[in-house]
Length: 114
Image (spheres, rainbow, N blue to C red):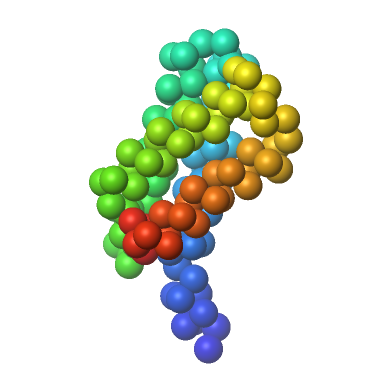
């Protein structure tokens, strides 16, 4: 029973893992400190974040990531992080994460990730 639960939750678990690895583990100090001031740092962070999803989609498991989802993940990450780091419109890490999770949930609901 536990095995089927793990398999059934495979895609959401992989998406969360890709999210946290891309958004936190792979974000360098330079990206974190400069993305609010330097577009190169912002775009590097968002590209690295998106790369985590692409790499996870290459794993030999049942995880689908459409090319449109890759574009949406990148562009929405740029938008959300710009609102937070550059303009200060998103002031809480919790709201920032909620926005990212809403995007990922939407991609699931439209079948762009499965």
